[in-house]
Length: 231
Length: 302
Image (cartoon, rainbow over all chains, first blue to last red; front, top):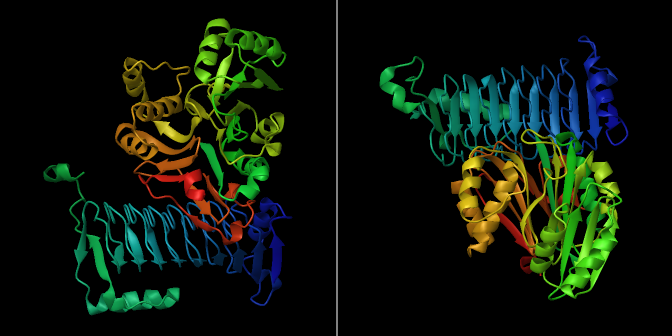
């Protein structure tokens, strides 16, 4: 395992080393496991990874941590700033604290686990990523969500799933309000199974039958003058 | 983009270190605001019936002592002058009203940055680190401070356009965001008899809150009214004689982080500014909710 102390090493140097890793870095190699110390809220730590390495970050990170992640597993032992795992393609990003706004925004694949709370606009414009939040999410979460799953073990803020497409939302607690074109849908045994698998993948214990499911009413797919008031 | 910071010391034993900790917070927001920086520090209060004025003149050689002597004569009150670069702090054994009136009449070239019992305001162009060093921020003690690092998106980069904006005794405001209805609000406030010094949107917010409080509103009530009347994006931090307040608009697309321990409470646009505070590793760290008013006062801390 390689340990990098960001109190001594410039962040650019760390990211450059991570970006230089060869895609065929062998599984047993030292470069497959990293530990980052003293992140002190710096931005874009471990962004743009493309190799299946494991990174553990001890402390709070700033904006865009693990952005565009591909293949890698990134664990943050602390809180994180805006845009965590923005546009994640694959791999796993786990936050053991809270995440600020726009976590996993536009994510296309992979799994993002936030063990604490996520702030507003969690999963905004998500396009296939799976997001599991152990706590609650803020307002406008899953706004314009196109594909993937958002699982919220706590409550969701106002305007959940506004203008949602085909993403599926599971919320165990209260929903402040549903956004335009987002409705509650039946929780079939199939959905309970999907949710159970998601929770298991995320390593979060929760009773899958206690959740409600929300999704698109599909009224806004095409502009319809009769729906003008809904915009 | 801008950065804002606030630090309030609950534990009086930490007060001698206010400036040192606050400087790390201000410098932590350099990337959000490299154009100019400003701070309001609440420390070393003038006694009853006395006041402090922070004044600015571009010329570092401005004859502050001479002017202080004239003011002393005119008010028949003792005036102590502390000269720091292009600022001066006048400690006057009289209230601020006649002193400000005299300055306006006899020295309109001098800009009043702030006034009150305890507040001193320093702001200048340049990197936060340079501004902090120029005015000796690290050496200042005190109970609380608010600060701002500016990346201008609205109105010119000058000392006058820098934050904090003051609009009443011991009251100041720093703002990250942009207001959209400030011209209308300024015209309305002008009709209520208020005068403005710049074309800046944040000055309008500062005077708006000062106006509400002069009309009898509490800090909380003024902020509640602000949620209705201010249109735009904002995270605001307001300093008062007794504490500070934080408010985000209902959409909350301008960032803010709060952290609290038994010894202090701090706000910053980003965690980077909190990273150097003592005991931050075990502090309660959270994001203030949209449209929710957060206040801390010396009374609560006592």
